[in-house]
Structures are given as C-alpha cells and as structure tokens.
Amino acid sequence: NLDGLEEVVLFQHNVETMIWERHRDHASNPLSRLYFGLQAQRMQVYEGQVCRAAAGVVAVSEADAAALRERFGVSRVTAVPTGVDLEYFHPPAAVSAAADLVFLGSMDWMANIEGVEYFVREVLPLIRREKPDCTLAVVGRDPVPSIRELARRDPLIQVTGTVPDVRPYLWGARVSIVPLRVGGGTRLKIYESMAARVPVVSTSVGAEGLEVHPPEDIRIADGAESFAEA
Image (cartoon, rainbow, N blue to C red):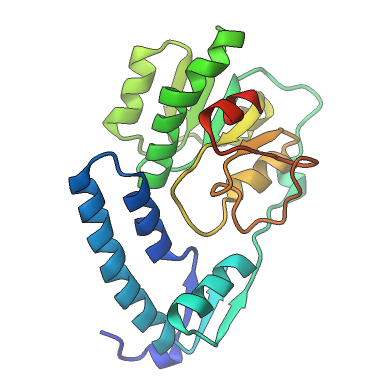
C-alpha cells in the first residue's frame, strides 16, 4: 500500500535489492540461488515503487544515492553521510586486552552471519598458520545457533551476545575485521573502530560508501589469502 507516501520522507539505510542480489551471488547451492534471486526480483519492484512514491529519499552515502537514482529513477534523493562521536570512542589511557580480532554487528542479520562464518571457515585458518593462538571476539546481539556453535568448537573464539558497551572490545582488540561479502548501506562499525584507534581490515563491500583512503587509513582485501595477509 503506497497511500500517503507522497507526504513521507523515506530513510534508506541501504539499497535492499542489492543485498538480496549479493546473497544470490554468494549462495552455496542452486536452491538458495533461486530463492535469493526471486527475492531480489520482488524487492526490485517493491523498493522502486516505494522510493518513487515518497516525497523524498535519504541515503546514507553518495554511492547509495547514485544506485537509487540509477535503479529506480528516483530524482528526490539526498545523501547524509554516516558519522560517529569521536570523543565517546576515544580509548582511555589504560585498556585491557579482549581479543586479537573483533567483529561488531548484530548476529541475527544474514549479512553478518555469512561474513563471520566465511571468515572463520576460510580466513582464520590462514592467519593461524602464522599466529596459532589468534583469538576472535564476535560482539553483537542475538547470535544465531550456527554462530554460537563457532565458540563451542573453538576455545579461541568468543561469541558475546548483547553487551552493555562495545567500546572495551574495540579498545582491547588489535584489529577490527569487516569480512562482509553481502550487504548495503554503510558500516558504522568501521568509523567506530577508527574512532577507537583500532586498525580495520575490510572487504570492498564492507567499506562501501564510506570516505576511506586505503591503504592509509584502512586495509581492503576481498580474497581469503589477501584478507589474512592484511
């Protein structure tokens, strides 16, 4: 129902159609690819209708704004860039070690689940060839059973669930990882990590839409080998 949308400003925290397309492209079997492909087609139609019907659209990056214009013919779209409170995330003088690597994100969201499972399966074993005791903290609410199982199988992996404050996990980490292959919008976790003075290694998708300048302020790597090396 599109009634009333002509009086509404729509905030697009990502381009939903792109997320379903990326799930399709990384699906592990034909049935999953078919399912995600159908969902992408349906979302393409619906998302376009809603965006065109709204009085205006707000995107989180210029990249998303351009995608909305190109995909859906939306003219009334403005990008408002992502930002964080630098003082809030600035590390204290003394911090306690948490884990070598930290991943921040809601762990009931498909893109985060896929990214963490991919990292543990494909990238972490490569890192442990050089650093066998490498630890990982997965910090985020509502971890699904497959994510909790990672910690049960590996004592060097910690899955926290909801925490009252993510900052100690950032301050206590050596690297913040963003191994996402699926997703859209912008990843606030990257700016939070930077504000916490933690180096970031991300995929291209993970850092999409952010004002970053690799390799000066972030390392970007898309293959398992290159991600592990970074």
